[in-house]
Length: 62
Image 1 (tube, rainbow, N blue to C red):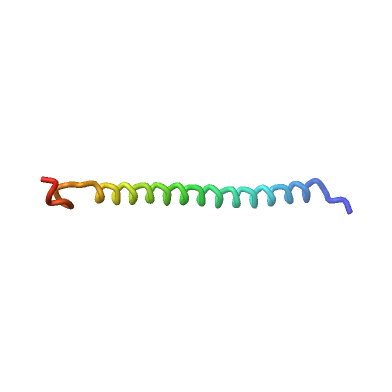
Image 2: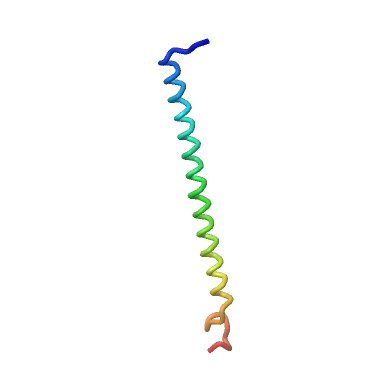
């Protein structure tokens, strides 16, 4: 069964739209992942600074 050029073009456009949609989702997931990693780093930094002796956490530090 041969499809007319118009039908083929429409099919191609639909496939491209689907690809664009999945690409958009992948990019969103990557951004979320990077955001989560950044949050983890900030949390780790916060925990580290709590562990370091400071006037607030260690009275004998003064």
